[in-house]
Amino acid sequence: MIKCTSKKAPFDTWFTNGKHKAHCDAPREKGGGEAGFNPRELMEAAIAGCINIWLRMYAAEHGIPLSGVMTQVTLDNPHPGEAVFRFGVELQGAMSEDQRRELLQVAHTCPLQEILAGKISFAGGPL
Image 1 (tube, rainbow, N blue to C red):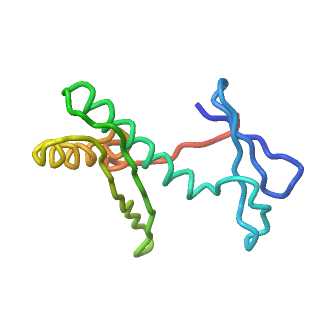
Image 2 (cartoon, rainbow, N blue to C red; image 1 turned 45 degrees about the vertical axis):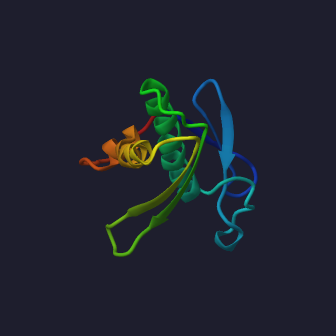
């Protein structure tokens, strides 16, 4: 669970999971102070981080000599009600081409992608 708290600066918002703290903000053109990542960037970061961690876990479990991963994610909204997470992966290490292909396929199966590919709904109310 993530808890968010508004601060004095317009739109500066701190969040915590009870162990770690960070903050996000709106861009200047929307009245924010750009004191942190904006919420859209946090969504991109969540997917990029998930793919990155997922690939390293998979490689470790399957004995693939992966020495590093760089992931990049961009969220596009080509039409109302449609979101496309475009991602790229750079694999580092002395792997065979088959191992590289395998990891690139695995990149499409990170847990957050599995969640977001299903039915999503929002339920909210007072705390």
